[in-house]
View 1 (cartoon, rainbow, N blue to C red):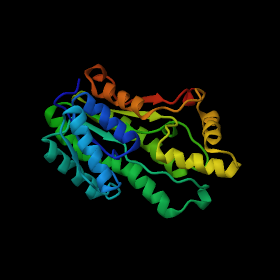
View 2: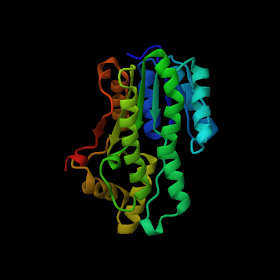
View 3: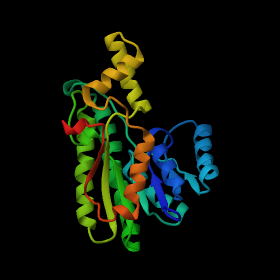
View 4: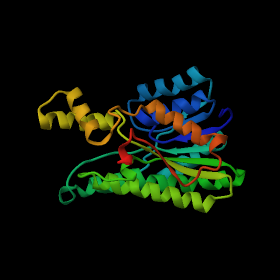
Length: 260
């Protein structure tokens, strides 16, 4: 479906981003992956993409919290792939605390990576997409881009910002062949969420699986985690011709979380 397309996925050395990268590669897209981790583990994933799917896969490291570094990363990605058709803005971090207790450095870091990096990467990719009169910007927001939870002021603010930025990007590029949409996952059992499960288990004095069920019961009516693979398949759909007139919208994959 995506053979010959060139995709860049931020925060794609593990979790949701890696699953999205694998699904895009499965459909034939060449890729730039990005993120932190052990060099050997990253190389295994990069080589695995090429071996498993017969595509070109390049790893580029960048501190996306730095505005110029984020823009340079996109320029380097375009050079490495020979263009860009799909940009998936996925990189993100989390911290929880009451507003009055929220560390300023944590606030600044979350806004920088979860929101500002989306802006800078998108801004750097749009000229190339508009020139070729086609492109897909796919922002990984969250159910927290639509509704709120306590102790997550920075994350909720950033993800609401991503949803708003998605709409502006869509409107500014309507009719150019470039679309922009956001995927809003509910609970996905990534390392980020695993930390919250562990904290809940410790807080309540229960085991990990009981804490996982409690976490789901609070928000997600299906009582099942969204899988990274499901999010990858959603990204493939948005990148396909079937979604050519889908722009400026959010795709909730959240087990009913935001239906309440």
